[in-house]
Image (cartoon, rainbow, N blue to C red):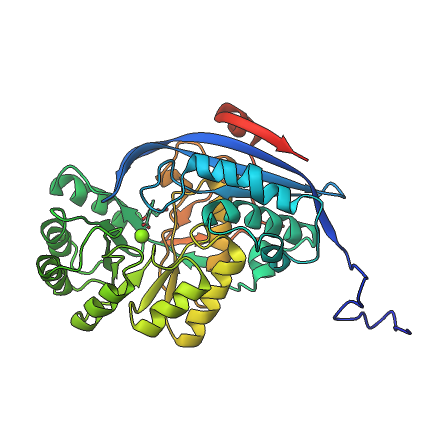
Length: 390
Ligand code: OSB
Ligand code: MG
């Protein structure tokens, strides 16, 4: 076959491998960072975070980093720190090592036989996207198709001991220029604190997140209808993740858009949820969706359906935060994300340069890959455990 060198084949001939990448080593680290302020939701409270960081190395010595943002305990979703560690060491890393791939979108094939475990999966998905972008000396945002130089950001505020403490937190972040405020709610901590914030900050875009704490029951519908009168931008995940019909029923009752977080775990559940009218807004999280490939697919689906999306967070360290920012540079991310600067959560982060918000936006890193580098001293100083797989 004659092929002009100026016209490379778009589809490689069978048996040929163009620029194949093989991961030959996976390093895993469990890193603990204390939170500056304890965070409470309807499901859990925490004062420090233990996240798994992963470094992948290919046959040429190129590297990429990823982060597992799973909470330690299975209270947000079914995964937890130990389940993620086991899924990575026993399944995802062994299925990746030595396998030839050309593009990170090939990797779902390598992992196609492994069910669920999406936070664990996201760890190596992010690391391979980072490595791939670095090999091409391109930013991850650019590699994904993102165009925004900076993304609008908001804050997510936990349940506080009282309304005064909450008002002080809102005050602080509104003064720092954050574009909207999200309040965690739960039965017993809902209409009163939200109405108090609404009254004190009448012009601040405000939304709430229940992490599935309400039930499809008349007394809870009554509370949610009361929230409907407070001019909220959205009500996030009022009901349990798998109760799509309850969300659809509620959305028909409310003027306020329902936003889905925990319910959307794949592009398939996203499509089902939208078809049922279970919500009008989607929170896209890289970690919950098992990585950047699936998160981008949900973005594309929502963009085609005219459904606004925003980038959610899981209190990521700098690696996961940089991945979220790269994703949020895609054009469908029109609403402010849970993408505050690292300094809102941690005294020190594990990356350089630090990620900071300014005037309610965070700049999308422009350097190769994630555009941040691991701070080796910070990594060593906060390390709990590590292993190497080859
Ligand atoms: O539901 O969005 C959520 C944090 C941990 C677990 C779940 C959630 C959150 C947040 C914080 O809301 C988002 C962030 O600031 O990273
Ligand atoms: Mg949420």
